Every structure is written in C-alpha cells, then in structure tokens.
Image (tube, rainbow, N blue to C red; front, side, top):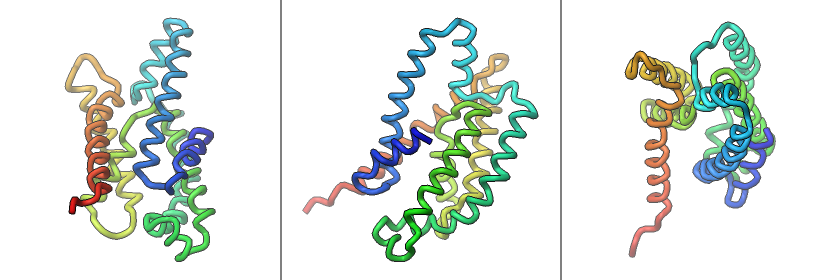
Length: 209
C-alpha cells in the first residue's frame, strides 16, 4: 500500500496518465530491487536460493493453502470490482471530464487502486512477482474485444491463460530443467512494454508543419 501511494503521489504532476504511472512504477521498482539485493547479499546461502526462486515468480510446489488464500481474496475483491469497475470508462476520459460527469472520482480512484493492490499483493504472496502479466493481458483483451467498457473479466481470464501457458512452456521447453514461470513472462512481456511506450511517445509527438 505504501509503494502504491508513493507511485500515485509521484505521478500526480500531470494527472493519472497510464504511461506516467508505468514509468514511475518502474523507477520505484528499481529502488526496491536494490534494497532486496542488499538483503540477499547479507542472507544465508539457503535463504538466497529460496528467495531467488520466489522473486522470479514460480508455481512450483504450490498447494491447497495458496489456493485458499487466492480464493478468499477473490471472494472479497471481486464484488468490489463489479461495483467500482463501472466507473473505469469515465476515469479514462481524464480527471476534469470525469469530475464533470460524476462527483465521486475522488473516492472511486483510491478504492480501485486499493483493490488492485490487495489482489496483486495476495497473488504475489502465493506465487511470487510474476512480471508483465497485468500489463500484457489487458492489451491483448482490448485488441480482441475492441470498444465497450474496460473488459475486467476477460482481461483476468487472459492473464490466467498467459500464466498457465508460460508455466507449461517453462516446464516443457527446457525439460528436465524447469524454469520459473516469471522468467518466461518477463521475456515475452518486456518487448510488449517497450512497444507500448514507443506507441505512446509517437502519439504524444506533434506533427511537423
């Protein structure tokens, strides 16, 4: 929650632009990664091996406890998303227009961010930080289902399929060695992030006279 609050505050300068939030998030993540590296240097060898696997993101050796944690989180968060998700289309129009159309923008955005942080935190606690899934899945869904409100349920399903597919690839492509699923999603997701940032830069560049 503290990290999310820091990202939002630092991204407030020019509004809550999606790409600005991404860039600020990358900077904060780099700072926190440095702190994690410092802790790993001072840790014992066995702890480092366990932490390294978790930090990459892995579905290996997950059991009923992890499933229970995720199901409990979804039981609480999904109803909140059903209610709050109706405001996403308005929020995409920008702060000024959103305030004109509805007066609850100041309450809806923090609630959405808080719900997203809870979902991300519990998923990370169960499987480690599997990178780029939350970035790639909505982009794929938007292109498969253009128009209409932001597709939360299809995006969640796409994200689940990406994780399962990446996990199968990590287990089968380099058998008998099993790669952490986060390594596969990182290889696939990083080019997508670069592509989206490049597209955003091109759209922000004024046309030459």
